Image (cartoon, rainbow, N blue to C red; front, side, top):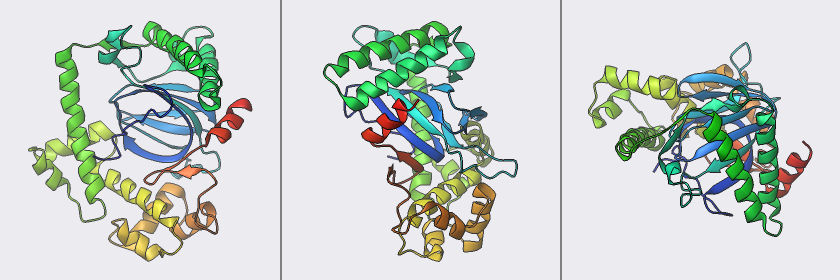
Length: 318
């Protein structure tokens, strides 16, 4: 299954995952969990279900389950990304089975994706910010009885969400319809993920989904907020960035392995997105041994997940 459908793991405590993540470029993806993202530093841009919104330090966003979203550093006036102020997020992911025995409605709750700072009254956004920070520190430090602290603080956050954020508790039938839509999105993303390095055509996926080319093209743009070709190019750029970390690979090899028909086209895409050539990007963002930083980079995206000790240091500096 495609990694674009984020399969969230819960390694420390059931139904809860917390991470500190620096993201310069994360393509459109979706997951079945609720997700809260608080900007610790830097600034960037979300695209949520086709709608663009900026995020600054202190902003908190709720991403509803199954909502397609992408994240990037802030686009500059010339269309390139501001890589000098890459956003760092505190991310809380909550399974829809959290507290299920006490509140079974959580399993079929559909929250509207929203900036919490705009909908929480009074100082509630500040309270949620403190709860997120405290729960994250408990998660990373794992002091004695930290599980009780975590469940308590995250339950308070969920109570605020239910009280102040637009949501719908759908029927099992509606939930099944949503599942069918998600399955289609999974298939589309999976097909692109498996074939982006080769010649890939919109017509082929439309045929697989038994849709006309026109209908599929409109459907794709409405789901992802970009055209089919734009999405494929973004996917190829992600692959190129990942392959750059292997210093044994030339840029010519990287361009072809990433699915670009011509190295000049890859250069054009990098200049358009980052304001520099692939060669300059590699020199600026990769160290001599090919590593992007001391943090752990994922294999598919340009994002770095902080270690527990790094996360604690960043959170305690706030």
